[in-house]
Image 1 (spheres, rainbow, N blue to C red):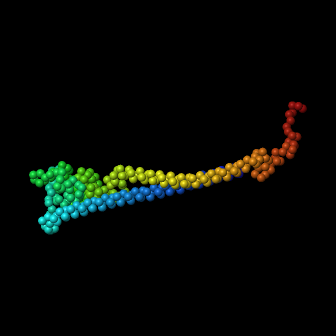
Image 2: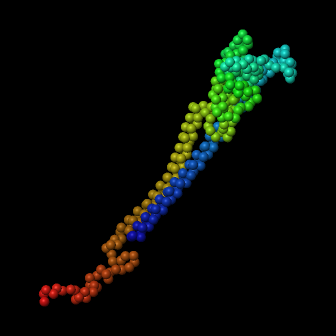
Image 3: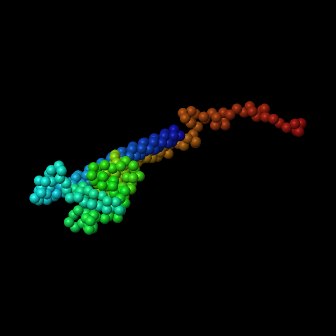
Length: 285
């Protein structure tokens, strides 16, 4: 009976260990799924960024096409093709500093304030001297204008941080994008400017919901299988226990572990010699 009880405990410990192993396997599978979804989210951000680049290039191409069609219809179209020809010059007074550039340069970021300055419905008009005044920092503006001319940005990160904020005023998304690319060339950081906050929240909620569903499905299947196995084990153990209860209890029998201890428990077989050598009192003599 004791051996069977011991074996029952061993079986239960084995079942517990198998449950722990199954739980570890489930946790490893969940981590693998999470890693795959993390890669998926990262690839999606990269694709979204490439899509924005394509849209920006498409906008530039459309603007150049419009400029070309407009110039082709004009009487001076041939003169603009000459190396010595130039487009209309624009004078800008930024914070008291005079800058001179061309209409083509200002239109290189079609959605910017600078491109709007040379449109028909420009928000700012030229003064009597033909200059447009902008009340901003001229020292930062020179870097913005240099980027529109040749596409270069400075390497100093503190300066880039100031330029990023200043470009926001002019709505110069091209230089803001270039700054983000320079600071994070591997796209490790999720850029809030590349994805609206509401869209990011929806993506996180969708990924979280999918992860929970996968975890629940995996855990439910494994737990149900283990539960069925445990129920079968317990039924077998219960049947064995019922059979053992019908047998004589071990403590009422003279046999234990295959040996018969009847001689040590029988009074008739006890040696009586000990009574003769038992100590007696000397007071009775």
